[in-house]
Length: 313
Length: 313
Image (cartoon, rainbow over all chains, first blue to last red; front, side, top):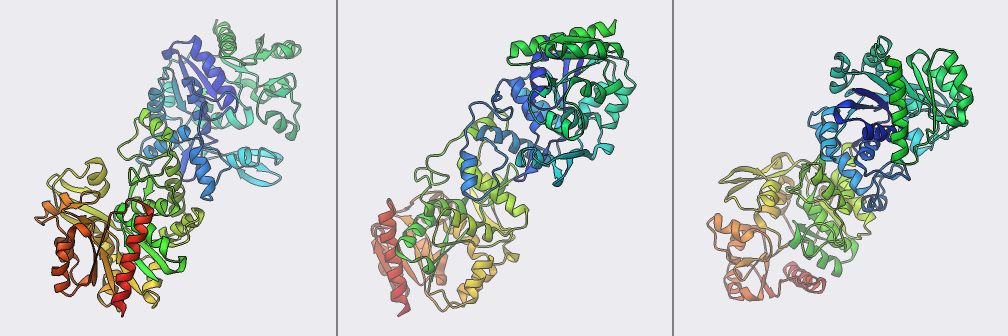
C-alpha cells in the first residue's frame, strides 16, 4: 500500500497517475482539508473535490477546480438574488456540497461520506480526508489574518503572505481510515504529491498523529517537487516563496521538507540540483514532472514508485 | 389595501390576478407556511415560492411548482450520489433555497428575506409569510401522522386523511409586516384565495393573531370557492373532503368557513347554490372562476374586489 499525501490540482493529477499504475488496494490518497470552509451554509472541501473529480474523470482540467461540462444556472440565479458569487459553484458540483453538508449535519464523518461519494463516482482507490476533525488554514498577511478561501479565491492570493497557521491542527486526529492505516503495517511507502508545500501539504503534516508516524517511520518517503525551472507549475507557491524570502527553486523545497523526505523526484529542467541533493543523502530521480496528460501523470507516478522501491532495498 | 390569504397554485394565480388590477400599495398577499420543511438541510417554503415565482412570471404553469425553463443538473447528480430525490429541486430554484436558508441561519426573519427576494424578482406587490415563527402542518392519516410534504409529495396524498394539525400554531405570531398591517387600519377588505381550505388556508387562520383580527374585523371578507362542479380545480381538496365525510360541493366550503366569510365568489357551473348561500345572508358573485390565463385571473380578481366593494357600502 502506498500512502499519497495530496492537496489540490498537483496532488489530484499525481493521484490520477498513481491510480493508473497501482491496484485499488495498493493506494490511499490522504487529502488536505485545511482549505475546507462553510460557504452559503454549505460545507465545501475543495481539495477533496478536486481529487475526487479527477479520479472520477469528471474534473475540469482547464480551471483545476469543479467539473467539466458544468452548468451555472444556480450561480446565475444566486447573483440575481444578491447572494455571494465570489466562490463559483456549478449545478452538478453543488450536489456534492449539499449532500455532504446534509450528511455531516446528520452526524456522519467526513471520511465515511467521502468513501461513499467515491463509490458513487466509481472511484476504485481509497480517498480519505487527512482528518475528520476541524482543521482550518489561516493565512497571516499584510492585509490581516484571512481564512484560506478568502485569501486564495476572493483575494486571489494578492495579499503578501507572512505566515500560515493551521487552526485546530493540534487537536486534530487522523481520519478514521487513515488512523487505521497508520496503526497497521500495510503502508510500504509515502508519496508527497507536488501540491503547495506551505498551503496544501503542511496542513496534512500538522496533524500530530501523522507527523509522529512520519518521524518514526520505517518506510521511505518520496516527494515530487512542485517547482520546475524556477516557477510553480500552478498556483501561488512561487509568490509565497518569494514573500517568505526563499528562492523559487527546488533546493528551497528540499530544505523545507528536510529529513521528512528520503528521495526526490525533480524535473529534468532542474537536473543541476540533483548532485547537491544526492550529496545530502537523498536519492534523486530526474524526469519530466509536467503532468500535461493522464499518460504523463502515470509516467511520473511510475518514476516516484520506482524511487520508493529503490529506497526500500 | 386588500389582504389576500393564499396557499399554493390557486392562491398564486388569484394573487397574480389581484396584482394585475391593484396598485402595489393596494395589495398584500399573506402566504401559508405550514407546508414549509427542512430538506437536504435546506429550508424550503413551497407556497411562498409558488406565489413569488408566479408574481415574478417565472413560474411553471404546467407543474404548479418550481420555475419555467428549469434545468436539473443538480438533481440528476444528487440521484447519482444516492441523495433524496422525491422532492424535485431545479438548478435555478435551488438558488432561492440555499440563499434563504443561509440568511435564516444568519438570523434574518423569513418575512424580511421574502421581501428582499421579491424585490430581486422585481415583484411590486407585498408578499409576506403568514408567520415568521415555526408552524408545521401535520396530517393524521390511516398511515400514521405525516409531515406535510411527506404526505403531499412523497406519498402523493394517497393515505386517507383523518385530521390536520398545525404544530406551533398556538404560539405563532403574525409575521412582522402582517402584524403591522393588522395593527393599523389600512386593510379595507380580505380575500380568501381558492387554495385548499383545510391544508393551505387553515394553517394561516390557525395563527391566533390573525384569527382574532378576523373575528373582530370591521372590513368584509370574500372567499373564492376552490370547488367547481363537484371537484377541486387542482390538488387533493376533493379527495380530502370525501375522506372527511363531506360532499365535494361549494356548500361544504361555505359551511367550513362559516361566519368568517361575508361574501362568496362561486363558479357559474355552481350557480344553483347561489340562492341558498344568499339566503344565509352571504352575497354571492357567480362567475367563471377557472384561472386558465392571467387575463381570466385578473377578471376573477376584479369580481372578488367588486363583491368586497359592495359589502363595504
